Length: 292
Image 1 (tube, rainbow, N blue to C red):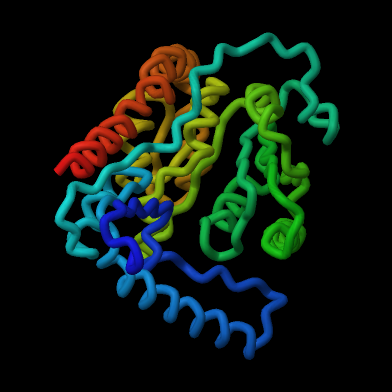
Image 2 (image 1 turned 45 degrees about the vertical axis):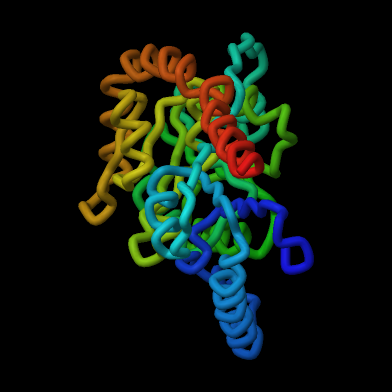
């Protein structure tokens, strides 16, 4: 950009980086923790310094767009496109591989959490495990990468003597929807108020659950509520209240057919065919800037 200032630069920010938490693992030494903190602070300063070269900014939801524009003092409008996949019509699944893999009976309801990575003491997973631990006829399945974060959460479940919490290896992209539709409810439990990037997040998993037509158990965060409550496809809970996740799960089962019906309607509106129009709006703005 310095060498060719006439070029238009688009910055795509997938996180509110200056308020993005550092996810320390139990394996990190004191020296490594200090090093990680110093590097993060340097990266935040570099981002804010270099933003003066940016002409347009693209992010992942409305809440982040409202913050990033003023934070960077951008002259042009900040655009956002949510991580909504293409519409997918479900195909019948004859073999419930999730149940077969863990030997879970058909009478047990499956609550599923999917994520490339899981983080201890950040995504509120510990409280979910505590509340769901050994509850009758309920199983909690994590689908995630096998790394230090997963092992920390797995050890927490073992410390709770949880016999109904399971960990499944990460899936290929094309396997995600067929596997998810074998479950009963999808979990989005972040509830991290102190890290604004997480508080205002809109996770991919929420839309993957929607495409798999799974009612959603989420926390009462701004972007989650816009989807889950507005389209009535699940329940948003306040985990500061005792047994919020377990009570929310029971509330979903009490209105299960309604949420299943609403999911079919919601994904016909919330899909990439419709969401991509916001990306076209960015292209139009860039094109207009080029012609000036």
